[in-house]
Length: 136
Image 1 (cartoon, rainbow, N blue to C red):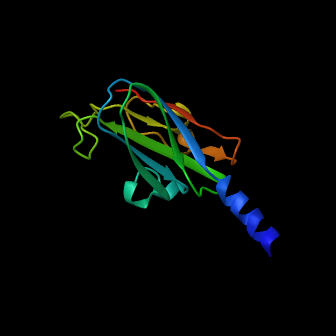
Image 2 (image 1 turned 30 degrees about the vertical axis):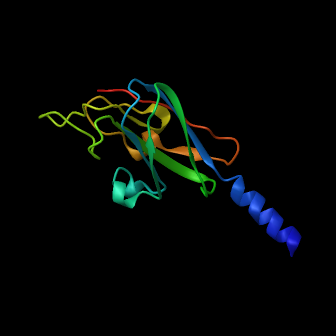
């Protein structure tokens, strides 16, 4: 029984999704990170499988760790809420004015990425997505 519990604890511990966000330009605000596991839920924040809000205290890069993520297919969306108002600010045309990114660094120019463009395979301990935050 102890061996089984030890194995389960090790497995659970090793299922951390580590995401490295790069190109942070301002040491303020928060990163809003959403991880989706279904095509139908992609880009609907209230339907994300995992969510995390992380304070930004420096420029450059920041690693975010999300625990308890099983191996599988996922897509990530993130934005840097620089002014701290809790939303991704946009201009009058609907174009984001704060930095954002998606897994696979998918950046279609005049639309949001599709699930297939942002989807990646996560394998615990082997997959570390590196996402570059940019403004439109």
